[in-house]
Figure: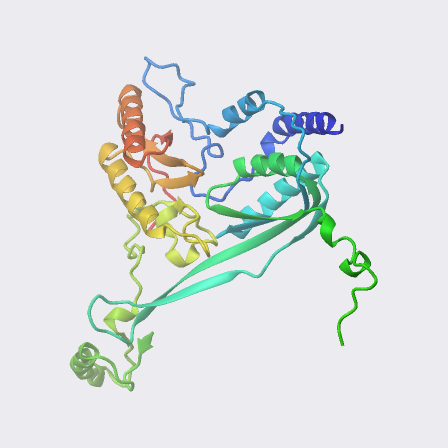
Length: 210
Length: 171
């Protein structure tokens, strides 16, 4: 059965990705990012001078422990087959989506998943016009807008377990302020009772009455 | 928008015009442009001074620069299209900012950046080295424990310290 080999194949590339791609985590444009600014700070003598304390991001330590926690399960039931898995990511920042798209497509290529098309639906702007003043002054207004940028990655002909692994990896590394919607299109076996037309089975003398 | 002498304005504008017309007639035919009081935008803008006011990068840019040269101070998904929970996240943000301002009194160098990743709430702050590191560590642990009990989610504090406030320009 191909199930054990398929599963084993999934685990090794995942380990390779987690070690190799950890530096490719998408960076979001923030005013103050945890690991970009290295501000030098010197402390009074009781502490060692190199201990400029800034607490590190917790994701890097949890990623390595995730591989050992998951067990390989082999079941008898056949795997679900997906014709198409649509991953739609939304954000306020287009640059973050560019970086995330590079990360997701590279991860899919490393895992051997066929990437269908990667496209960008049109951005959606929600505008609100409010009165500028608390009381009267109807002629003076203020306008705010909320822009949502989208990015769609389509993966085609993927098995259920591969999809589970890929989506979990990709979702664990979602940047802050990015939302994801996953649409899966499954393929099912055609039911036996509609494979052949019904009139072939009926006896020949069952003619409609005049 | 500026209104020149010939156009109509609010009552306040008319009264200032009436007062200034006397000055105008004495100095010759010079145009006077008066802006109505509520035409100016005052949100998140420091008024220009003599060059002695220090501004951080965050304060130097106006709100319409967000997305161009400014980032977002609070990053969550509830303001995206089709997502809910914006009001709750905003209330949490306001409380956390006031809480941090009060706990680390006088040692905040810049605005707090709040990031929400999955269930976690990550609070990024720039501090000035006003207190000893022991006190800082205690306050960081206290804030993390209290906020995680309050919001029922893991709260992580990412703190970096500076000697003084990082000044971008003087206004």
